Picture 1 (cartoon, rainbow, N blue to C red):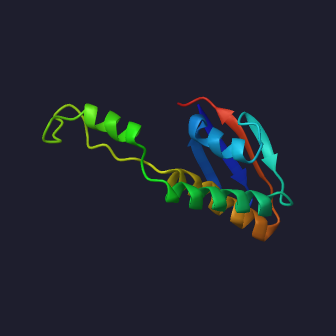
Picture 2: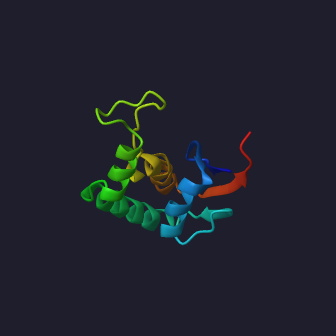
Picture 3: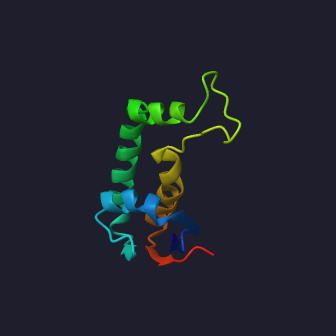
Length: 118
């Protein structure tokens, strides 16, 4: 499922629900549908900026490293899969954070709903 965030402040931002849920949980918002008002935007920006900074302080966990290594050969080659590239929380959160900054600046709300993937 996809979530599409809308605001008059910026272009739409789309994310998989599973990725957006972590962000919306931090903001105490329902992942199915909701609104971040222009009055709530400054606090939402503050929360996301803090969480992004925190996520950058912690290296990849050993469990994730072991999982990646388990799927590759002894020399690190893997003829069955593409090279694994991790997408960080910061990378996933940035487009919404940018939208929230613009919404805060312009006094606009951010709204979302869930749409089935095409």
